Structures are given as C-alpha cells and as structure tokens.
Length: 43
Length: 424
Image (cartoon, rainbow over all chains, first blue to last red; front, top):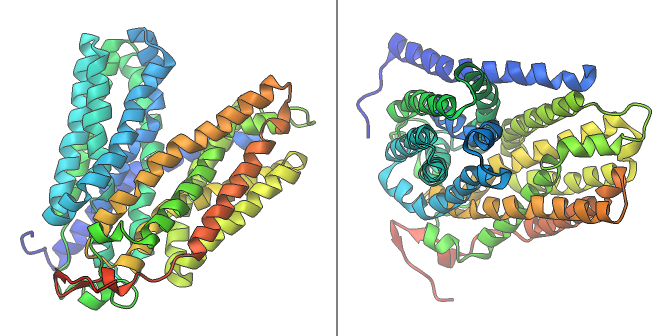
C-alpha cells in the first residue's frame, strides 16, 4: 500500500524524527499537567 | 507505526479541551452555556455514529485512507469554525467543529486500531494502549496551547477565528505524519501471519456477524458500565472533592481542586497504556475483572470512608480513573481475542456507541442525584452517597456481563474468506 520503507540509518532517522514529532508536544502537555497537578498539594 | 497512530490520536484528543473556547464564545457571540457546549456534544455524537457506520469503509479502504479522511474532516471543521467566528455565524461553528470535525473524530479514532494489532499481534493491548493513550494526551496538549493562543490573539470573535484557523492548519500538518507513515505490515514483517492475527482459537468473525453475537453486546454492556463509572467521578471531580472536605479542618481550595482534576487526567492517560499492556500478560477477561471488581471496591471505600481521609479519597479516585482509561484502551484487544482482526476496526467502531450512551448516562445520574440531594437540604459527602452506590451497582452489572463472555460460536466464523454459516 506504500512505497518500500527506508532501510538502515535512514529508517532509524525516520523513526527518531517521528517519535520527536509526537513526543515534543506530548512532553509540553505533560509539563503543563504536572505544573497544574502540584496545586493539589500546594494550593 | 505508534508515532503514526499517536499523531492522529493526539490531534483528535483536542475534543476534550473544547471547554477552553466556551467562555470566549459565550461573551463574544452572546450565546448561552448550553449553546456553547453544542459543537462538542454534536462532535461526540458524530464520533460514535461515524465510527459505527464508517468502520466497514475503514477496513475496506485501509488506514491511510481513513487517516486522510480524518485529517481533512478534523481540519476543515476548524477552518469552517474560523469562518463562523469571523462572520459571527455560530451555526457554522456547530456545523464545522461538531458535524464535519466529529466525522474526523470517529474515523480518526478507529483508523489505526486494526493496523496496530496486525503490527503487534502478540501484544495487542500494548499496541492499542499507545494509540488510545494519545486521545487522552490530546487534551493535555490542547488545553494550555489553546488558552495561550486566546491570550495572544484575544478572546473576541476575531481572536477566536484566528485561533481556530491556526488549530486547523497545525493539526493538518501534525496529522500528515500519520498519513505518510501508516501502512499495514507485509506478511514477512511484524507478526502478521494469519494465525497470529486471528482471535483465540484461530477465530475470524465479520463485523456484520459480530453484532449478532451475545459476546458483542456483553462487551458493549461492560464498556457502558465502566465508562459510566469513570464519568461519574470525572463529571463532578472538582465540586466533589471540595464538598467532601468542606467541613473538615483541611478544606480544598479552588486551585487544589483544579490540581486534583489534572491528576485525574494523568491517571486516565496512564491507565490507557499501563492497564492495556498488563492485559497482554494477565488476559483480557482478568483485567476487566480488575476494572469492574476493584473499581466497585474503590467506590465503596469513597462512599464509606472518603470524607475521613483526603489521601484515601484521592487514591481511590485515581485508581477509578486509571480503570476508566484502561477500559477504553483494552477493548480493541478484547475484540481481537474474540473476533480476530478480520474486521476488528469496524467492530470496534460499532462498539463505540457504548461510549455515546455512557456519555449521556454518567453525567445524568451524578448531576440529577446531586441536584435532588441539594434540594432535600443535604450537603457535603451526603450529596454524592446515592450516586456512589449506583456506580457500584453498575460496576457489578458490568462484572457479571464480563463473566458471561465465552468464545464465539463456530457458526459466526469466517472460513477462507467466505462466510459459511453452520446450521443453528
């Protein structure tokens, strides 16, 4: 259903990039969550 | 494949952050709170309907087609909403975000499910847990991001329109990763061998036949009960913790209650990946025994001793919310065990009508009872006592339904690509 997937270093780079693509915004969301959740103990 | 699935689920999970737009819309377009909730409510209804009716199309046309449809619908929903906010035409926001965007939610939600199970046939719980965790994570990202955007662009109709426009464009770009990367495994890749993708005992059942089996409706009941119980806490989390400790020496402040809600979101998300992965080790039926049985026990602890100890109250609520998330994430793997991967995406889509049902049932029970108790002059934990015991009852019903789940009868099995029903 798609062209041949890249192999070797290209494949590893693509995997790293795709995890960064979704991981960066998720890390931002988690950071904001932790910031807010600590209010339960300090607020 | 997991990042491809996450790019879609992290985007459509924005739906749970719709509340950020409610107050600005109400003040700028002079509409009521009920009306400002309409795009979200229509979106959730459309999610259930498009997942139920579009599931077969998703199976037939593949995950890339499904993700493309999800991208186009979800992003166009925002662009239409931007036009609606800019011109002051609220109906365009309802049509855009609720109807068009809602189709994107439903198709997007089910788009990676069967593909992920085919890539990870030995760990279907973990595979679908990753994706469905993304749906929980979507709101965590969107809520602060949308708030900051409204602070920058302004909360008037022009500012809201710009925020909608940016959402539409950014989500289109973000979801394009999923469209580009998603693909079903070739026979030599992953573990997509026919026996591995079949259900327990080599079973494959079509979506049309699955809805005729008692197993489908038992799981439908299990999901309704588990989700209703979770929503029971989610819906009233902030006022609930405040009321429970209002008369104590350590009352809960508004900001601490907000922190409690945030912590529940974290438990919901962690439960999706954690419990769903655990189900690969202990089995689907056992993990639902935990969700429903231990969940009922947690509700009982809150009802009996919740007001005596804040840590106990918080801990029980966190466990219940982790089960709520786990219930969502484990159900596709349970369906795979029972019906195989032949049309598991379509079957999952049909089962999501349970979500829509619970979405109405849960808030209705908790709000209606709390209002009646308030009218009767009750206050504090007494406002929630009846609701908590109803939730325990619902979880027990779900527990019994789970116990009744048996392997699917051979007359529903698909054989060599052709459905050959056996005599009844």
